[in-house]
Length: 154
Image (cartoon, rainbow, N blue to C red; front, side, top):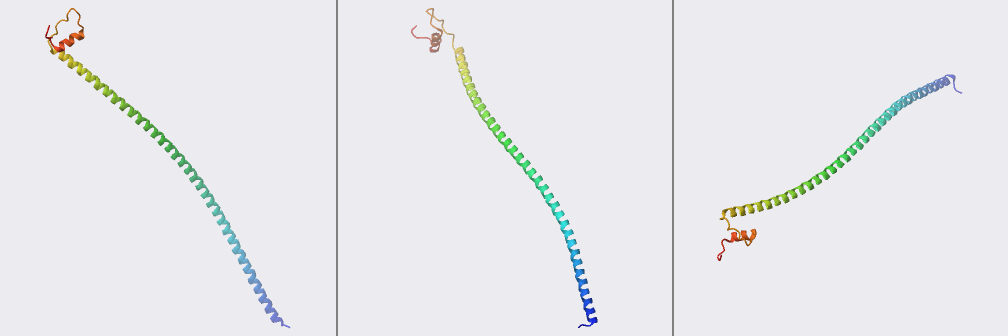
């Protein structure tokens, strides 16, 4: 049998080991509490970051949709502008064609006027025509005779 001092010594050793184990358990509980607190704070931070990212994504999605709408409006406006320019170009070409036709008509009228003025000048430069016989030569015949000059044989 063991002696009482050996048992006391063994009891004290066991008590020391129990105390050390309880201290370790307390330390582990403290660490776990601290870790849980850190984890809770980290979870809150992550949730806040996720919410912030969701807000940023929503804002950027709205901005992208707005930009797409603006691009569509600009494309539509550009298309309308191009159609308008094409219509104006066609109208301009038609006006230019009409202007060229009018210019050609004007040149024809001026040419006819110049010919008439030339004929008038020639007629004025000639001596007066002989009177038309009572037999009734027409004015056209009289002018034809005046152009031919006096007939030889009359």
